[in-house]
Length: 140
Image: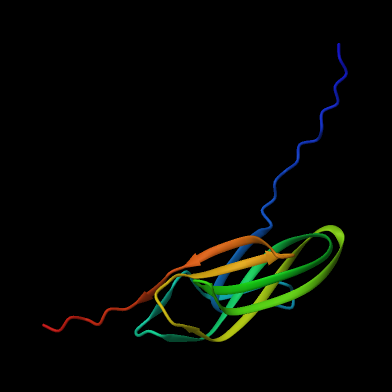
């Protein structure tokens, strides 16, 4: 009989539990997360357009160490909005809820908007958000 030690299985963890757009977000005193008006696409009557206010809310798992998180909204290769933060994590892993208020987001074309999250310059999340122009109703 051979004595073979098996390495413990490593579990692959998705570093971003969720990231979404909404009209308003808050955390109550008892730490409950409230998101109002969650949406998955931008809809405008005319282009270019300006979205007056939105929140990007994400839950990101951050490993131990010093890290820089960057959140961005992009269209093609143009950065529409961006926010960064630095975080020193002393535990092995923490769950970080990030709220980002974006005001007067200018969208110039019907190309999808990409929501990206970078951890130390490495992309850990990307989501494409469609941009739709409403068609004027046909007059009979």
